[in-house]
Every structure is written in C-alpha cells, then in structure tokens.
Amino acid sequence: MKAASLIQIKKELETISPQKLMALSLRLIKFKTENKELISYLLFDEDDQSGYISDIKFEITALLADIKVLPPYMVKRTFRKCIKLITKYAKYMGSKDAEAELLMHFCRAVNQHGINRYTYKAVLNIYWSTLLKVHKMLPSVHEDLRVDYENEIEQLQKI
Image (tube, rainbow, N blue to C red; front, side, top):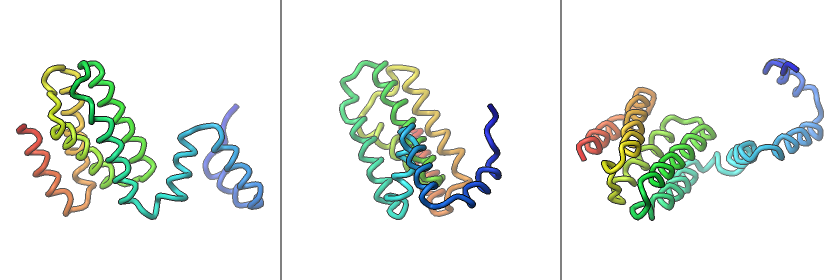
C-alpha cells in the first residue's frame, strides 16, 4: 500500500472538521512516544525554548554525573545515549543554534566531570565526532555564537 503525498494529505486536512482532525491527532499520538513528545513540545515548550534547553542540559548532566566509576563500555553507551537524546530534542526544536548549544554542553560536561576519554578508543571517537559535528554546524549558527563556539572548540581540543 502506497502512502499519499504530503500535498494530498494537506488538502484533505483542510477539508475535514476540527473534531475529526483532533480525533486523528489523538490517534496518531497514541502509537508512538516520539509523536507524543513532539506534540508536547509544540504545545507547551515551544514558547520557552531556553527553559526547554536548560531541562535537556540538566538531563545530560544527570546522565554523566556517575559515569566516572563505570567501565569503559558503559561510558560508551552513556555517551551514545546522550548524543541520541540531543539529536532527538534538536529535531523537535528545529534550530541549529540549540543543537550546537546542547552538543557543546555535552562536551563541556565530559571535561567538567573529569572523564578520561583516552582509556577507551570508542569513547574518544564519540567525543571527537561531537566536536567535529559542532564545527560543521558553525556556518549555520548565529554569528555571535559562532565566534564563541570556535574559541571553545579550540580549547576543548587542546585538553
């Protein structure tokens, strides 16, 4: 079965009643947690993006808090989990500035918690790829933030 195009769906949505539209939305939300999280963001958190970003930063910091005592493979899993969360939430926000800010917070948190990135090659690769991802994002980031992030990336690479 072939799905309808986005244009066809948009035209059909314009013709249906608000009650049916709400029923369709609720039905869609029931099936996937990501859909529910996206609708929650759009309804409640879109207006307060800075608060939403600070909540995500707190969640990342909490994940990295007890990471020092874990074996290297668990550190790798935790790093991947953090990057996955950042990617998911950045997709909801649709802002390269916010994604760059969250990724930089992850790199800062790794350095602040004193995690030895050099004990396990996979952990080091995740860290460097995150810095590289931020560096590639810099042309699409606001000019004021770009200079700050460039300087901070240079400092994080030296450590």
